[in-house]
Image (cartoon, rainbow, N blue to C red):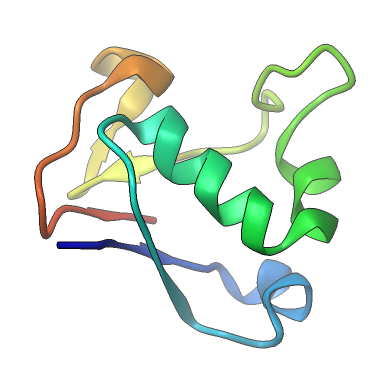
Length: 83
């Protein structure tokens, strides 16, 4: 079962104006990797040159800030959503 990433309005031009995108993976990092694989132009807006998420990018798993969980290594379950 795929997971859903809800795309913030300022980033929608880089996802063909999609409000949400279905992605697959076992961790938050894998979901984001699948997203940036589908929409390569989005990568530079999410990741710094060193491959880490930019400091100003906030990612929430089911309304929980991943910085207070296991960051990109946070496991996801089928049906979970990111925003």
